[in-house]
Image (cartoon, rainbow, N blue to C red; front, side):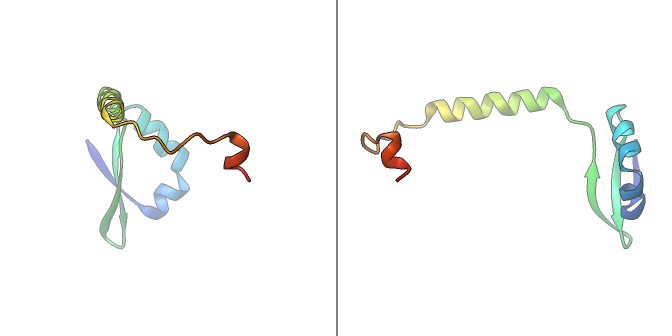
Length: 76
C-alpha cells in the first residue's frame, strides 16, 4: 500500500522512510499538495532484466576503430 508523506516529513525521517521501503512499503512524496516523487522498493528481477537487455544491446553495437593511439598520445 502506498502512503503519502510531505516533503518536509520525508526529509526529517529519511532514514526511517528507507527502512520502511526496505520492508516493502511505498511512499508518494507531496509538496504543496502535489505529488512530486515516489519512493518504492527496487524490483531486483526487473533490474536484472534491464541489465541483461543493456548488455545484449552493447554487444550488438558495431566495433568502431579510431586508429592506433597510445596512452601517452591520449593524455598529451
